[in-house]
Image (cartoon, rainbow, N blue to C red; front, side, top):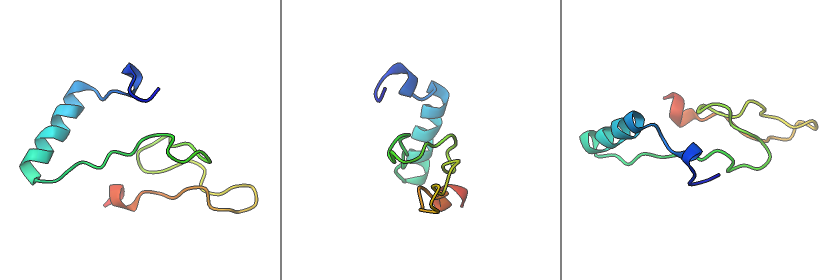
Length: 67
């Protein structure tokens, strides 16, 4: 559930993101699971299933995260 305890970041990770934001003067870009109803993200890099049964594109790997 969005906003529930299972959606929260671990305190150490949240603190590291906050420190990085201050040190690098950059805003974090959070990716929320479930934004695309046609596929599910099991990792931060991208969805496990990229194509549907008719070869339609369902999702893509995150190039920004990999860089």
